[in-house]
Image (tube, rainbow, N blue to C red; front, side, top):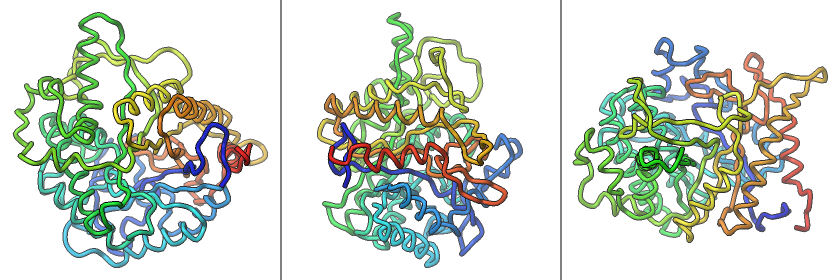
Length: 457
């Protein structure tokens, strides 16, 4: 295995995707409906009116996509399983066709020398479970554990690393507080119950996987921790910053790492809920030994005191906070470009959990890609983004952060949730009319990095 300067031997170089964003085939082989299928049918929910019915058609083209990964030299591929493809209604016996698809994908990856990294939940909740209450309903966490047990039995020790939940902050607060993601509910109190039940699902799911495969099975979780900075040292700004941090980071990180919710998390949200959804034993269940902690990173922001404008807000208990970013370059998502924030986030997390290996499980940028006269997508801005952010990971490692892998988001252009298909994050371009894949300059840059600008370290 080659070594990129500044990175440890065995560092996992990969790319990431998620099921609903690339698979398509939503009515194929008995797949059930997900909350995203329903949300996409809501007028105005998706900016460009697109949906995931076809997406990148990975379900039918996975062999082609794995061949692309092999050509790029990836040593890892992080993908998610579509829960409705396994259990159409979120309960009961699994569909053989769904299990077979993921089994074939895993075998294809292994044949290509690529380590499969599985995420069990990347937001595509079976619609039947949402109809029964969704994540605010405690029972959903137990249904997730049953699903996790099914997948562990089906894929077994062919998986390099299992991750339970992807970005529970988004699932809970964009989906149930702000309503800008599926299922599109604006119920702040319910969103806090959803957050707890997502935490509980992680714990129960971890227990379920290890119950099948043994306690040594590598299992982790993926969080979109927010790299926040106070706007000033004014007490009002510090108060707002603390509350945003409580519901942006601590509400997930503390139960997983320490088996508790912070006093500030509870007090900041006390006007919304009494936290009676937390039952005896829950926090012990959530606090399972982690084999790794995945960190998804895209941007930073500063937080200070502000004025609530009454619009749906994904920060329950901190709706009155003001979020600002410094002037400077932006991605097509209007997110600021701040590689130093990634270094800060990795080092800060490492200080809180020094014994837990970290992985950058998503990092990348959307830009408005245009093919050159030669038909190639010369995405220099994306190359610069990756170059600066991978350098930021290197700086964190050199400062002591135990980072063991990096996954570019994303392998393919895909359905970017509420933004639809207009925002392109892929290092491989997808023509949505022909579904032809074309590696961009960023893919070739990443290929060269992996292949070893220095193979001897």
